[in-house]
Image 1: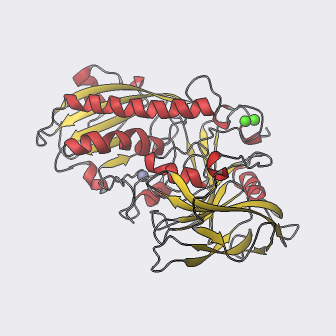
Image 2: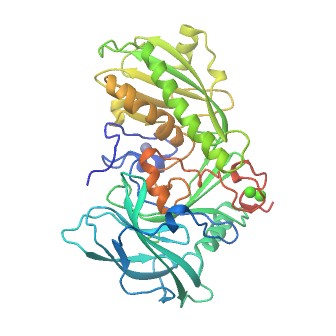
Image 3: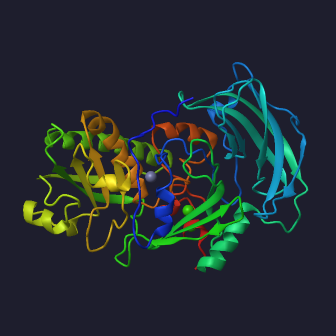
Length: 453
Ligand SMILES: [Ca+2]
Ligand SMILES: [Ca+2]
Ligand SMILES: [Zn+2]
């Protein structure tokens, strides 16, 4: 099965001397695009409730998937994973479709996935998964995941009782609470977390639990990899202190500069129309998401200014803010992000990063832009219309707000995974959810994630 609509000419990188982990994250392999990062997780407030959604209640047309070794009301005996210290359990499952991915959701979190191709049907696979909130009941939803229709073609839902986890074993949430305290000195009651399930679609190979926290002018991230490795990077946001990111809320003022190498036959004036179309689609998506979470105005907006610069000042590097100022009278201090779009069949500059699109970080500085933050190379009409808008307003823009390829899409459940075909919107890990239960989404919450000051 081919992965749907991969932007395969598009590759992105975040490059900076400081953010070496980002460099490593974004320079892996040829699959660096936003599609198909199998993944997931929902995030729970104090206690997570499974919300019924229509796709879960519809009866399957025909049962193509089933649990093999457990029935409704059955008992699951959990063990402890030696590497992570988390509880772990295994379940044998079966699918009668050899091509579509198979996922296991546990209380709203996609906790395991199988994207391998199988020769015969039905095939059986053993899912290892983490009963992430300890002993007790879990609604398990075994699902066939259909990339093409954004639907769940078949599923079996059962409720099981998990037992055997020692009293003192950490839950995923308690482990993150402990790590925020230990590593960052932060006292969070309700951290957001999610699961990344590595798959044949994902450029990153290590499955993990991931948590993010946007607090003040910092973004904190904690990853607990299945091999036991714990990483705790942190970055500045909306700050001049060092190379950092933009907060994923409010209005981002974007300056898009078009540089024409004169070898594509394209009209640089056409770039603006394509950008506006892409922006309109993205704004609509952010508006819809915002409505769904009860906001009266969009959580995120982009204010776009487009400037056709002309031929490159010097080949081999991006245009500088000073050159833009001299050429167009625009003041770089008025913008949060500088996007350069090169019309160049040879992909001279962005090609150094081995792709068509790149996110270089360092946006949203208080003193304004000091260098290119996002770039995209347009080769032909097709890349102008199809690849560029999605790259700039989705993949690279969300990188500029801190997104890593292993942050799950939307709420991180299996439907979010399926919906990732349309573009990644890491709304959960961006804090576009109220997880501490005070009615304010975390990115706008003065006491985010139940922060105790
Ligand atoms: Ca809140
Ligand atoms: Ca709060
Ligand atoms: Zn990327």
